[in-house]
Image 1 (cartoon, rainbow, N blue to C red):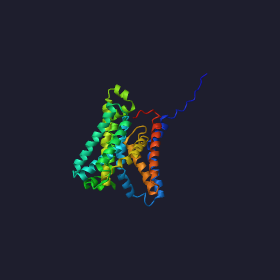
Image 2 (cartoon, rainbow, N blue to C red):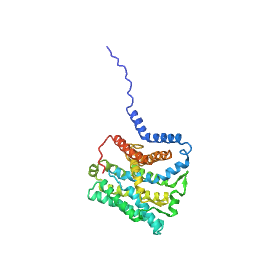
Image 3 (cartoon, rainbow, N blue to C red):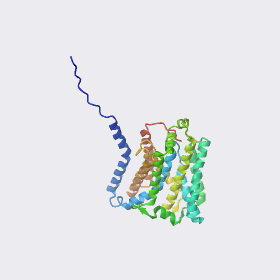
Image 4 (cartoon, rainbow, N blue to C red):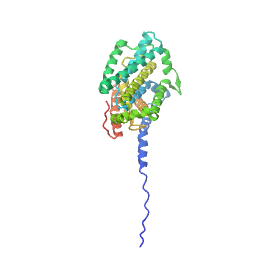
Length: 335
């Protein structure tokens, strides 16, 4: 007697929910950013939702965006660089001291700031790699050293009157209504994205960050990659200092510390979006301006100043937590 077996329906593809969830995860922060803008727009319809407000926001937070991009380079290789804020301050103050007080032409002042940034990155790399001191300790020490050096250079005073050429190059013109400062950060993000995604150097950075011993056994010069990441971080932070000096037209000896915490929050929050589980430049840019939108909106609502610190600190804790959950709660050997 023949037995007839009813054909079974083909199982639904298992990958479809995973793709949907991953897509939602990639763009969740963008959606929350849109909702945040809409919320502040309802609360402040006459002042928040204006192109002038967003133009100022994009320009004024360009140094912070550059600083978050500087942070993710060594983070990708498994190192912390806490000195980026002090490097920003050192850069802007070198430009101010040489150009305003010393009468040095602006191009030479910018070159001096760049050389100082390279020296900072090289010094960090030397102590971290040669003496095997944790990056947290070394960069915290260089932060204190540079802070004292800046206070000596500037006599703890703000230096105004930086050459108009820098101000013009940073905020003197606009493209699509947005000052040039924003596009410097955008161009840096594009360059970093290209390196991370399409060049062997970017793959080496990621490989070193995921496992230094495995990378070393595969023939990667781990110390060279880490040194390059630390120097690149200092160079980008130096550029952030030049942009900061151009935005304000002055050099403030305490400016960098105000950007440091939001930049770290943006770096880790950015690792939860666009390319979840990886420090990536597009995520850092989105996270920077997401946090900037929150701070700007709260300030326009008249929230007390201390709320800004609470907002930034809470954002950093939540960003690190979500970043670890995205990575599957892997133990981190950063620092």
